[in-house]
Length: 171
Image (cartoon, rainbow, N blue to C red; front, side, top):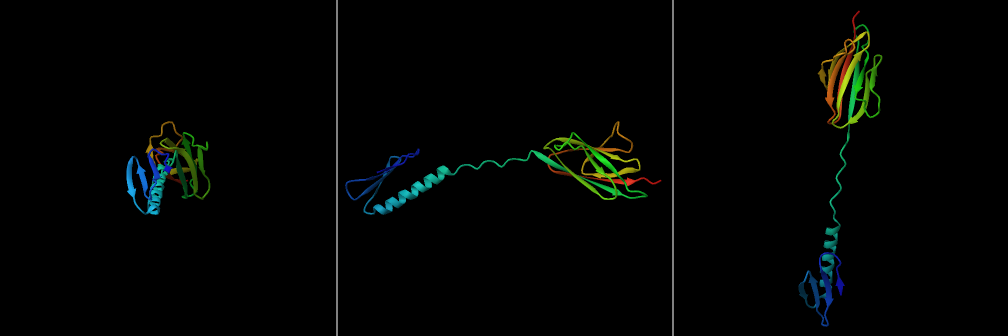
């Protein structure tokens, strides 16, 4: 005799005769003469039942909680190379609130912010430069900002890239 311990009632009973009786949930199926076939069928049933019981729903994939902001600052030469910096508010996860452009090589800075956070960028040229252009964010009016500065805002609803060009002033 074999009995299942799951929610489904099943038992394999060998009668006094040469017949095997397979009971599943109170329903009897009679199999005459071929006890091995019944045993194989019953084993397959148990295999299917156990694999179904063990097939759990997979855990959800964790969603990102941060978004990366990549800043590219490009110097453009007129009589001198344009230089300056970008100030970030609020502070990114690293705490570094400034990305600086110095010299004739482009600079790239990458910072992580909380997903969905609104970020303000303040582009400040040095005393011999101007911000020629910005892309990747919405330019906003800059009240109380340093001379020739530009501001823009963006919402970190995913990874973002912002580019700014600094041009040297003509003398």
